[in-house]
Length: 310
Image (cartoon, rainbow, N blue to C red; front, side, top):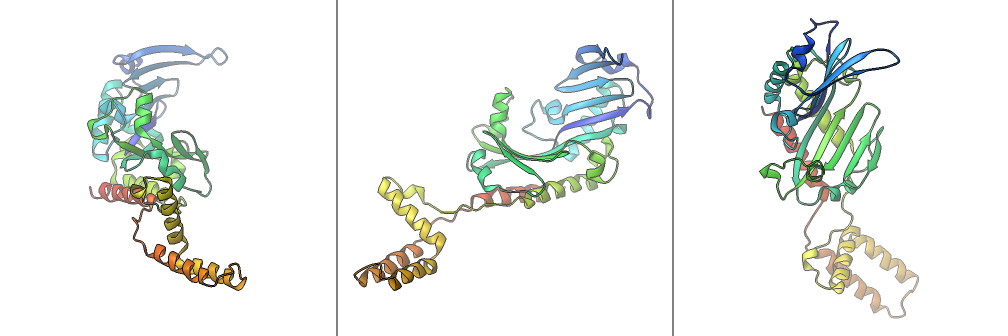
């Protein structure tokens, strides 16, 4: 469930490594200087990870699954975390377990029945977050945190990322929680890199990921329509009417007809009974129940149960 991270290794609290040892295995190594302050920093890259050395710290930023798998459609499990951290530590010749976590993204993919964008309208208001939707994504923004729902396949295609076989020709919705700043405040403690594989911390992240999702107001599909029974405009009109009748319920429609009867809307009394008979039959037509957002509710819960079973 881990994806992008940012670590900071303090050169004041830990023994500074030799600069040449840090960058000997990296590519695109550059040295830069701020003309005003005179401060110098060195930057290098390794499999999409960016390593930066300055006066007081070494920062490591990027996607852990991209570093390990070459893509981030597959996120990093808790069991794989130690291996990746050790690989990175060996690469830049420092013990990353001693570094502080300054950002962590926590996410999961869902293979869905519909295109990801279709589900956004069913995800409504979230208190203390700003909801923002664009062509491929849905954001819930705060200053230090962000929740995202987006089309993972579309993003992979835009970034020329290889798509694993299990996701090819599939609809893949990504739900992601990003802790962008004030990590200590979020966890109510200092978090070191070594803590990312800790079960208690991992479960805390799962609970917060799940809690945030559950706090989003869910919108149910208002009218259910059996589209497989539609082949003409008249069929659509009929299915739409059936869906509306079943959404309102016959009792509500009966009240409307009774009010019309009191107002003597029709000249012929039998019109009222005919209408009641027509809509009573429609209210009893069996239609396919489809609460769209329940599909995502179920998949989110499945992830929680699966991840907590290890």
